Length: 153
Image (cartoon, rainbow, N blue to C red; front, side):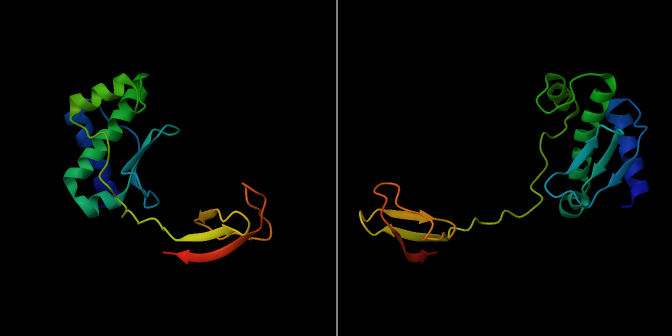
């Protein structure tokens, strides 16, 4: 799908679902990472993440378009267009628009590498995600010196 086809699709969805015209620009934005689309207040344009179409197909794309058109039409009418507003939630329900987009990026497992330190005086152990310079820090309990024990994974 190219940008002209996207523009036409958004105009068609707007007239069929909302019975109102979409008169501004629509485009794909490859820089969007975690969101399916974006309505820009500054110029009333809509940007769509092309990954939605590639990963989930036209059905999900139309859902994202309907969501962004809810923002668009409510903002143009001077009503509550933000996610938390009643008007927005009501229009989402009326048009069958999704509240959220499906997951676009893979969730990466968090690093759980821990460094173990111990106070030489009171033997209190400290677990840290990041390595620290033991010459700069002292034990918070007894002010004793801290030594590096091992790295856990």
